[in-house]
Each structure stands twice: as C-alpha cells, then as structure tokens.
Length: 272
Image 1: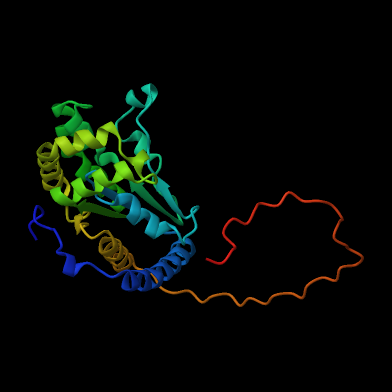
Image 2 (image 1 turned 90 degrees about the vertical axis):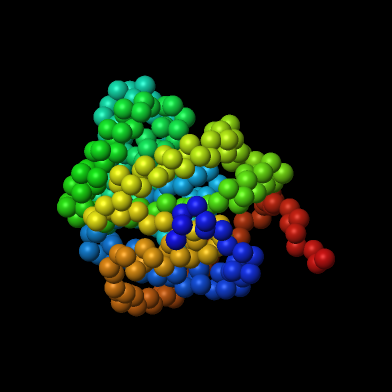
C-alpha cells in the first residue's frame, strides 16, 4: 500500500452498528489478554505514532476503556523538564517501560525525536540522526529482555487531517485539542512526511517492525489495530472463577435516618 494514498471512499466506511458489535467482542478479548498477561507475568509495550489528527487518542481509548488502568497503563509524557533535558534522551521513556504483568501504551514515545522534535527544531539534525542510528539496537535489547514491542504508525491523508483539525474549532468538546503545534504540523505537512519516511526507513526492523494503519476511517482503524495486537500477542483464555453471591445481611435494627438530603436535580428524567 502506498503510504501517501490511503484514503477510504465513503462507501468503504464501517457502519456504527457493525463497529460497536465488533468493538464489544474485541474489548472482551482484551480483558482475556489482560488476565493472561498478569497470570504469566508478561511485559508488553505498545507505541502509537502519527500526525496530529491521525486518531491516536481514539485508538488508545478504545483499547483501555474496558480494561484495568493499573495493567493497561497509558503514558503520555509532557515536555521534558530542565533536569530531564540534561539526561540521556531515552532515560525518561525507559523508566516507564512495563514490569511483569503490565501493558504500557505510549501516546507518542521516544520517536518524538524523529518526528516533532526534528520537524520543529527542538533537536538538531545531528541529534535526530544519532537517535535513528541508535534506536534499533536499543529496541533489540528490549525484545531480548522479554518485552513484546508493538509499534503502530497511523497514516491519515491531507484532506482528512484538514477536516479533523478544522472540526475542532466549532466543537466545544474538541476545541482544547487544537493547539499552535497542531497548526504548525498542518503547515509543515511535507516536512513531517520526510521525517516519517526517514524514521520508518531507519527503525523498521525484523525484531521491532512498524505496522502502518490506514486511519482515514477512525472506527475501522481502531478495530484493525485491536484485532492485530490480539493476533500478535500470544494469549489464552483462563477459566473464570466461580462467583457465589452471599446472602444479604439482616437489618438488625437499622433504620433510614430522618434527614433532608441535598439531591442532584434530575434534569433529564422527563419524557420528551
């Protein structure tokens, strides 16, 4: 697939009914995976990268909304502090790697250096190239130390990114997501394309390959990613423990206190 030509036609878009039916099934499988990871002490690291507006946040929400946040842990690191700037570049990321029984999801990762930092001039060209020379060997060390590493690049085309970013202006739920950095990334489309191409060329390895996802249809992208990671990570369904609800205790003289409570008004209980 040509990475620059991934746009779906409207006829190919998945229906809401199909989406929610499939998502329910896949989320149940994620819970089964979660139980297996804990049982076997597995360590899983999932990286999501892509342009602004590619749909990373929606994918992560779909993965984590029915799982245990103490097991499926999301890391979205802010800009580095002055102290962190003086450390080894990868130091603050590697401190967030999974321990046994954890799945860590990076909403952007150490690949910031190959993407936004390089494009926006937050690092030098020499620093970006040094990172790309080094990162394959560091990732090989992670894999050799029993970390399952999954890397996804969400690819959105120019027209769809524009539609999504402009849609944030008029939607009160999304207006906070439109930042000056988003506008600059919109402006620097081809700079980001060059940075993406260099990143994929340097770090798409046999031990830690990049998986490219067509995210022009966000719903379809979420389902495809979840189905892929479930097929990539070996797991089995563990038997569910038998649950017996105990009998309710007797009131033993308890009575509801006679007092006035401050109830929240039911604003939506009236029939239309």
